[in-house]
Amino acid sequence: MKISVVTAVYNRVATLRNSLDSAFTQSGVDLESVVIDGMSDDGSDRVIAELRDSIGVHVREPDSGIYDALNKGIRHATGDIVGFLHADDMLADDDCLAAVA
Image (cartoon, rainbow, N blue to C red; front, side, top):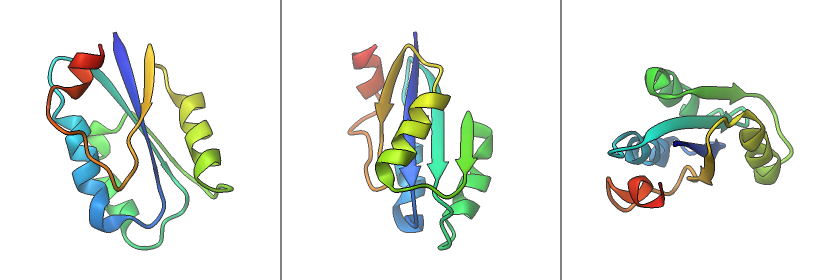
């Protein structure tokens, strides 16, 4: 079972890496990371570039706000389950998504 985790980001360089890393360290799941960047200009794009090998889908383009970005993420997701992990949030431990699966 594949789980798609959608992260919408706009100017969250201070928290984005920790957020994405909390998804990448999940154990026992087939994870697809979908990152939608609304044209951040604070360095978030550099963090995304550094983590590119772990990100399945990356879209960088203007949007009409967070709900537009989240809907874009849903359209790009290919998982059996789709969840959201906002750029300021982190999963509580490395087994969260395994529990969902």
